[in-house]
Amino acid sequence: MIPVITQIMDAVGARLANISEVNGYNTTQKKIERATLSPFKSGDIPALNYWYDADTRTNAGGGFEERSVDVLIEYHAKNRDRPFTDVAAELAADVWVALWRDVSAPAVTDPVSSKLGDLVSGMLLQEAQPQIGEGQTPYCGVLMRVSITYKRRPENPFVV
Image 1: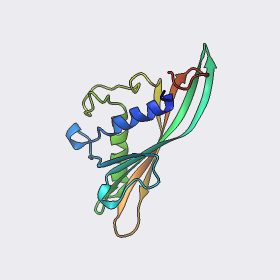
Image 2: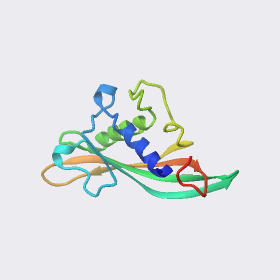
Image 3: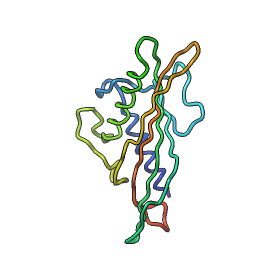
């Protein structure tokens, strides 16, 4: 049995894996990790790391509880010549568009698919914070907080 929250995170990862210039995005990710403390090395980037933070019950009734989970996504790329905020905006746009495209239709021009395969009832981008690295291998990135709402049975964390 796979908990609903794990199913949601699997769906998020599958959609992030479709970020590529071939699909019409600004970047092509080289590495995706979930909830790792060391998501990338210089040769791995552009790289994504994602995890969930708070998973909170927001409402209950009719045998279900509505929950909201914050998913944090950090996406890093190399940068030497452009304003890091411009690159961060492109990275954020790639992530946000990818979350709204089904794995079977991942291109930027494909139809929107907002429910992560009917696992969730909504997604909302709460914030996108530019990041900049220091040292000999400059990178920049974005840290995003996406709130995802979903329903499950209160007595069973495995069923949507």
